[in-house]
Length: 150
Image (cartoon, rainbow, N blue to C red; front, side, top):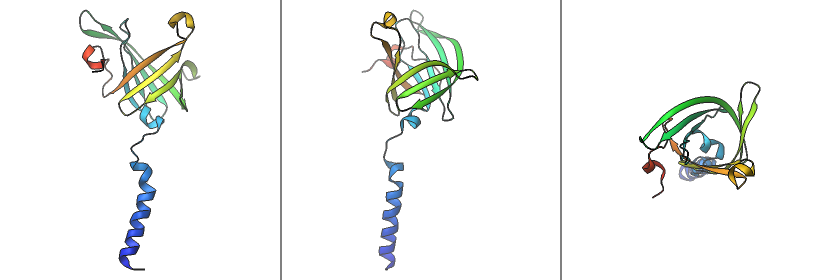
């Protein structure tokens, strides 16, 4: 076989084997990793969730103060999580007590939507939908221009 043909076959095989790396699509598990700031609720709750590759997570609880254009950090909770398909189960403690169960409605490199099923009496719809933006720091999106879609 000539040197040129052998090199072309090698390059073609290399391209085929590396195609998944360049597909541009992240798996849900990979896309989930990072810090996610929730669009604030009307009552000012604006949490930041942090998901790590090792299955650990942190929930940074914030409350926006709309009158002062500021926020208060209320607490940070260390957790673990499992992702199976579109379902995220969040646990607290070493005994892995289920804290909450969420449905991953969508996730990309920059935005995520979660659904939490709750009793009908609280939401009127059987659950709540939360919208998140990926952020570098654990800070809430309390300024309106940070989360309003343009």
